[in-house]
Length: 162
Image (cartoon, rainbow, N blue to C red):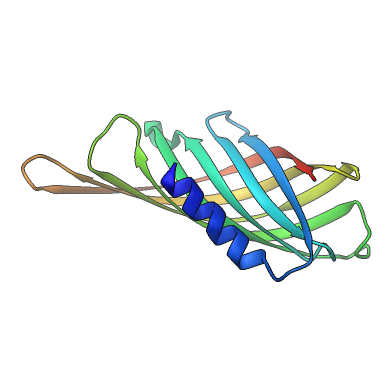
């Protein structure tokens, strides 16, 4: 919970001086191994987003929980009042393996996709994401084990703006 509050405060501090509005959202990926829950901030001119997230993921049979931040740069090819918002994104998360003590997971992600407003307060997301995960496990003997995974997937989601 402390990590979630820290991520939330960081998201707020990054976006505090920018006019815009808050949203909450949830999503999954094409394999249904990913579950993501987020709170974010969309600029009034639709040019970008910042969000904090909690993610449950299972790449390569690892059961990973991460908390992180993601920033999106939205492109406005159809004008700033368009319902279609293409974007690029980058994010960073920290977490652990579920049920395994003394682990540290570092996650990096990059993505491209589209937000589509189906209502003035609701947008749906479709995107292609590349995720890189470093996993470090410290055992009781003081040895450290390291492994890395990478995956690409299609993520879909929905966001409610308030």
